[in-house]
Amino acid sequence: MKIKQIELIEIKMPLVHFFETSFGRTYERRIILARVETADGAEGWGECTAGETPSYCEEWTESCWTVLTEILSPMLVHREFESAAHVWDLMKKIRGNRMAKATLETAVWDLEAKQLNVPLWKHLGGVNAEIDCGVSIGIQDSVEQLFEKIQTELDAGYKRIKIKIAPHWDYEVIEKVRKRFGDIPLMGDANSAYSLADVDLFKRMDEFNLMMFEQPLAHDDVFDHAKLQREIKTPVCLDESIHSAEDARKAIELGACKIINVKLGRVGGHSEAKRVEQTARENSIPVWCGGMLESGIGRAHNIAMSTLQGFTLPGDVSASKRYWAEDIIEPSVEITANGTIIAPKKAGIGFDVKRDRIDRLAVRREEIKN
Ligand code: OSB
Ligand code: MG
Figure (tube, rainbow, N blue to C red):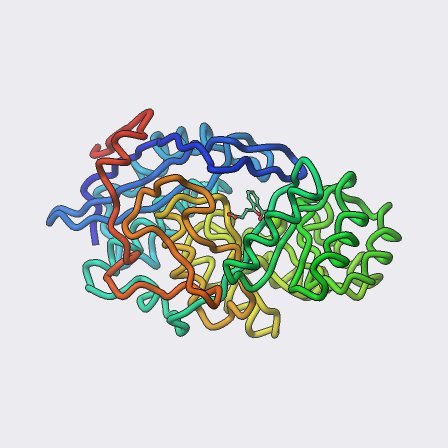
């Protein structure tokens, strides 16, 4: 396979509701999209999941734009490679920058599946044609607002509720949610807002029977997470700390987590995500698909990945309308009354890309042909 040309487009899209985590609020996304094209006109789409600031991780929209346009795209165009599974190797000399790499890598997977005329999820080795969906609800201005949001999502049929937690928004909030909604499948995501000094708080929160605490401690830690996990009953799930199958192996061996959140961008694309899934599965560690407030293109890639065997817990993959007034794909992502998404039957990511809408939202564009 050979990529003749890569088009990078940055779009700006306001979120329907702001999204607040322990590191701040997002009102509007700046999303880089990649379109890869072969000489015979076949194309594939990928999305960069980096945020607007280097808060969730070191990568952000601006760093990814530079790395994609100046370094990674020139490494990929006109190079002969065997298959999408080998794109990772072409970029091996570049350290880190996994979200930037995933943008191109996932686009090539879409292209390859389209060339083979199979849905991407099948091409990746997915086995579940229907995936379980949960939602991630950010920190709100009041508990009342949180209640309203939870009620809306439960009514929609979502199979688990994740709320963001932070030192000003934890024990009392979870206690109120449990009182109001009873025994719903509930979990908390701290985005690294705590330290081992908070072990007693986590011990007290064991009483809430949460499905898991996601990334309670530092983004670059596994050692202290292992210490915490030894002290509490609630499973620890790692998000920020896991960038590769090797990271997963070490975290599991150390006892740092009982569950892993897999994000395509954070691990560098489908090939590495498959390896993380395999490592976890071989160690009986369940995984689920995390979200990064993606547009429809990233969302479609998340759906495909979620069909792999080891994805046994509901992911943060939810309907387009929770984020966007109008998505950039057609149809938009919808969930069934049972809180599931049916994997698409069409080739590649399985959704049509609305090129005219992307062009209207575009704030910059670059073509790499060499
Ligand atoms: O930690 O999972 C996270 C959004 C941005 C950055 C980090 C995270 C999140 C989410 C949102 O939880 C998941 C989604 O609905 O896309
Ligand atoms: Mg998280």
